[in-house]
Structures are given as C-alpha cells and as structure tokens.
Image 1 (cartoon, helix red, strand yellow):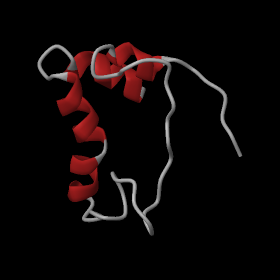
Image 2 (image 1 turned 135 degrees about the vertical axis):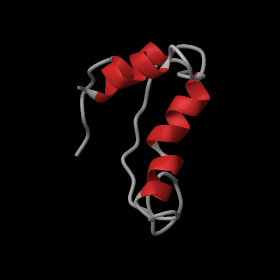
Image 3 (image 1 turned 120 degrees about the horizontal axis):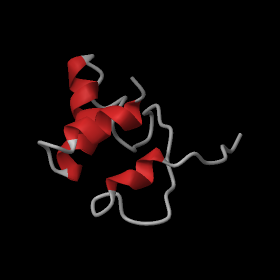
Image 4 (image 1 turned 180 degrees about the vertical axis):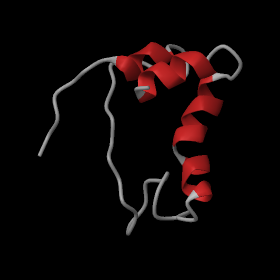
Length: 70
C-alpha cells in the first residue's frame, strides 16, 4: 500500500496533524531515531516536501506527484 493510500485510510479516524505526526515524529520514536528523523534541525536527516496549500486543511495535497530537486 502506498503511503498516500495509508493516509486516506487513517483520515477516517485521525486528524491531519495526527497522521502527519505518525509519519514523522512518532515514526522516529518507533525506530529510536528522535532528533535524527521526523524533525528539521542541524544534524538531522531530512527530505522536505513542498506543497501548494495547507495539508492540515487538505491532506490530499500529500498525494500529488511532484518534481524532485537534486
């Protein structure tokens, strides 16, 4: 299952902020990498996603396919 499909399923019972936290900060806790994953700070590993809108109001923004930057 693609992560965007998982977000759609989770949206039935969770708020957008809970879904995003699950994929970031909570995910980092699960793999014991707090401070390295799920955050934006010096020394952390990060992939940033730029969307045209507010995913807290429209979680479907995270499903869109986009270009990647090197």
